[in-house]
Length: 467
Image (tube, rainbow, N blue to C red):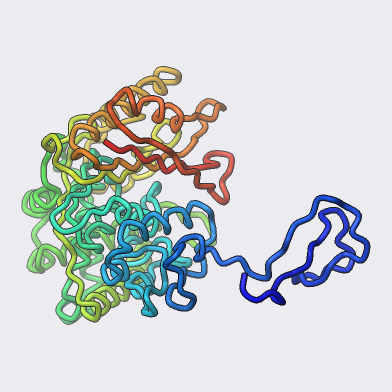
């Protein structure tokens, strides 16, 4: 690439004597027929952009380096290359577009707890430490590839803590999340609503001197909530209505109820986040009193709310509409041919017990988990029966995705090769086999290595299915 004198002479694969660490130089006595040409710098942008490549006009984020990221960056670019201004506002992997900083550059600077780079934990993604969320940056690029915008709908039938819905809302397309766990419906709704919080009003009304009273209210409320334990019927109820019901009929009366609903919900989520921190860090060097976690998280949430408010105002961004529904992915409450795209990650429940992981959250809210355990994909049955039921439910959920997709729409499924009873599963292969049987006309998978934790999850597969 570049001028001839920028290139390195042919170097033997078997004799690197005299080759500097930078790659400059050559072996004194090349003794192999097999050789290759080294470059000082390989620029993936020239491959990614092709004929549109203009050095200095485009730049990827510095931490974009894995093959799957470059593939996704190319895919999102191809979907929007006819409208560079829209692409600058939406791109996930480009730091610079047409010589200007992308919106993701500013969005990912609204850093959250534990954030590294530009992949996740920015904006309100980090609110409540849900185990099993996926990377917001990757999900944004997939939504861009699908090309959803405006009144198009992006669906996540296993919504979890709302990652897909947050990214869809931020890029400007409507979204629907269906989630079977009522506690996670609540978490998702609050995280999404927080994107629209009027931070100056919030911080003016909820002052530090009130925090001890607010903490005591939520701490004392647990007993009151458990006296009114509820089994929420999974009947396609709106998460916002669940929260209204919670405040009207389950939480005790207090000055806290005088705050606007969205602010009460934020305070509740801060308490639940503190409860999670307290539960998982008890007995470790990071252990603290529950009240201290509450104060720490209130300050951290406030920083994020401030950053979101200021960044969205500066970029003139308004989050698009979203709906979180308490429902079942096997019986989606949507019409045939109604959504532009599906972006989801089915639960790894055959290897990870989501109810046990969030039992402190479910118990605090007084939610009866017996029926939930009987209906959640991957938790039904025992031993070998459990895996068989998971496979049946997974296929049924994909059939439902197919039903609600418009013709030409994409379902994109992120799924890991989890280990069950000592055996590594390969549901990616099964899904690709099912695809033409269900009716999909195009289908392929992208492999994403998981760095760390290799015993339980070595790879994730991003599976693309087109109707």
